[in-house]
Image (cartoon, rainbow, N blue to C red):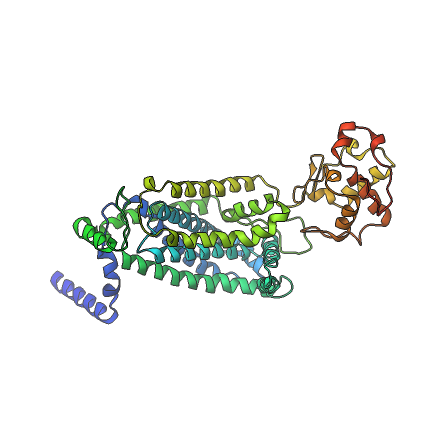
Length: 490
């Protein structure tokens, strides 16, 4: 009986293999030789692939209930989170799966760079990895927009505003991002298609290419001091070492499986214990009291933009992604041979440590930064307002009533979204103040239609008086009572 079942099973397996050829296709990936010293450093790539699988599975589950319509998306997300069975857990799995994917793909790239594994003949492995990193970030950003809350809508506005600064094609890019002249249903439909079809399709193709390249060129050994990569002899030397000391891949795959299992358990625990990210208030362009900030993995970049000098903002917005992308792509072009061991590549170690500290430092700054106006600032002190009834006093009150203080610091009070105006009188003339107040500026609306000539005069008098010398003098009599429009205090 047992023998008959065994023969039947063997015949079925042979029939199945004859009809599908699956073992012939994937078997070599399990039996190919891998370096014996490829141990725990090499588990991050497979863990990233597992996170992508979690994203696909949880994304399919969410798609059954999510409605990509501007009128229903927010409510469908509320339904998934609060009503649907396991909906809250599924959303959280999707979020933490994305977080894990971003984190692990970054660690994987750092390990490849640290070990010089991008060198000959694995340059294309590196190029495809850079493309996968970019797609992963796009996947994360578009996924954030699927929440279709106030934060998502304002994030799209910010992205379109940044894209609009690109020379020549900026207007077209902004129009493409918003799928029109304003954020609406077409915008959500466009990002839904990008998030669900375009980016995953490219990721599937990119991952397939990346794995094929790994199979073709083999897994890089751990770098050894003095083991030089010479494109003329590397392949022969690599295969000779592999034939001598290599082991079948499946014998070392237990580490990948163990780490992948641990990663899955961590994601499940975070999903169960922490839950999904909160959904902001419903989308409404008229609601300004919101915090359009990206998810944690892009906060460092927003911190860079927020802390940068206004004059440099355009260059950073347009140039930084381009420069970072070009630098990453050029790494194997600049150095594809020579030493791989970190001890013999100190500049590479310094570059990696600097990059990590840069991102981590700005990320920490972002966690303590005000991204939006302060909608509940403390009122200006009597010392700042000056003598009641004067133009200076009235200007200070207008500074508060017109919400200037929501975005600008004044003597330590107010928002930090705009420049600190505590000593604006030292930096701007009366004419400059009038022009800026009337016409607005980067991220600042114009107030020409919201101020009477008298209110504008009083406000300018107040701002013009904000100089270090007035603080030092600390005398109300030193403050100008009134100045006619069109004249300068200097």
